[in-house]
Image (cartoon, rainbow, N blue to C red; front, side, top):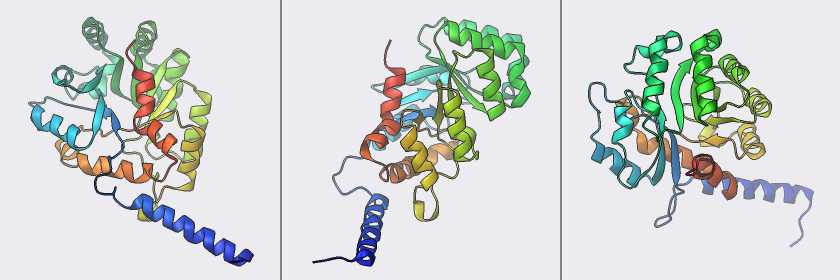
Length: 280
């Protein structure tokens, strides 16, 4: 059958629509969902975990989450996570929730970091919260220097200005950018990634990745294609409601991952984490 220009365009459009529809449909029965490394997970113990540990581990198994970056308040929560799960522990510089507002000017927090680090298994510091000039604190600079000295990642819930300052403290810093700037435009995110080769974007709570009908936007598709090695997924289970919706969070990720080439989807879902956090 011969196709004219108009027919070819219609055929390509129809084919594209069918491919997108297939990507948006749930995985076929019996099909193994792509494994996910959860690069932003809290198991907070204030005053005690909302979800018992056995329920948490069952959630991971049910959703084929094979590894986690654990960062908890206090760090007791991270110590509890184990049992056949690949756990990459990060040292959180908080004892109680109010430390979020003051840690960057508190010398006792640096003492906490030094003390906890002696456990010998932490791979990073954070998640910590910083905004703008707060990152210029001398105690933050000491934390960045400590991280670089001990080859630790920094997990920063920060605006772009704070990221700039962290990198100015020491260009050798390795930063996981929690939420990838929340609502910053993809062009701005691309500029940050181009400026800082040791910056990786973690995508929990990140808005704008999908549009109408759950379709991956052209801008984010282009960003993932240009920087396939620079993104990680996360749940950010900072409150009980995030645990209650854990399956939905993972399903949403898998919905737009299926719209990417398989090799790029695999990197974002788990491959980048395996490369970054492979056992030393």
